[in-house]
Image (cartoon, rainbow, N blue to C red; front, side, top):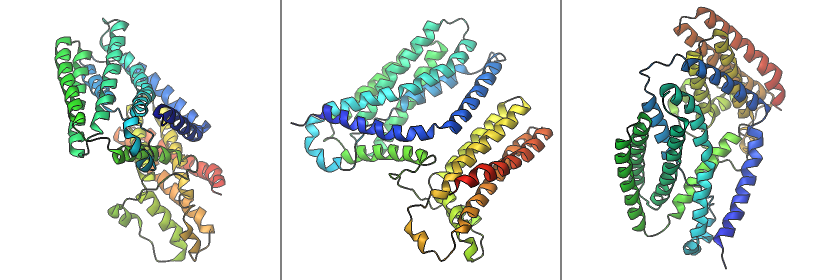
Length: 403
């Protein structure tokens, strides 16, 4: 007799064991120290900024938008795998307990996002509305949890719809409604918050009616979405440890490739060309590099203290270089590289050269932010300090790791 509840417990145990194996590599000493420094600095300047908060600051709009997006992002983790398309379809009528547990698990693992956002916006809320009690804020967070559950269930119902356009339209409408509801709640307009909540409830019931009209579970869609989320996790983990389950994605990006492929046809340039193209076309490295530059640039722009700006410049140079160094092992399972009629020695030099180029480019971009802010001392210190740090870190740490 097939027991979907017991089957889910077994699948969940395997999933937790799988993810915890890589999480210990992701949150290693280097990243933990960098995150602690980053969060501590942001918290300090956040408190400083709140003391000078203007009276007309749009707290309700910002919190409404963030909370609306938070509750709208409610994916259902089914933990399904590709073989389930063959072996579980026959047991579809007995899978109620399995999918019920999936929704509960999805809600529990997303609670940390709610707690983080609640902790981050708490000081802003009380600084903007000093006359309100802590119970009002707790009530707002309780409503967030209620809407989180509602959106999670609605997302599950819409996963029974095969047309992607219908699912996207439903998600957009629900997201807008969520933002409007929380805008009215934060601004204190409970009448309009109640009216928009009723509209959301009507959409919620409409999603239920649509799901009931569907023929059954869209198994291939559930497997595809869950596998995509696991591949995202594997891509992050692959920057810290070898992940054999990772399916590397390749993107064309022809115009970027044409910019970096200005090599003469020579054997000595083989690995230079290979790693440049890997950085551009792989689904991991370029996106991570750009995101770190964007986040670091914002931190440098908004933090008032010059020396803290310089420290953040060094911090994000370190994070980028630490993440990009894994490109050395990107082609470790590709047997075609073994038939290249070239020596292996230039391989390490090609990666080091690429890391130097990326680090110097990043240091230059951060320095231009200082120049834009007319901080000429910061421009010189960040540029020279960034280049010096890149040289020392790459020669002293990275070079020893590329073996």
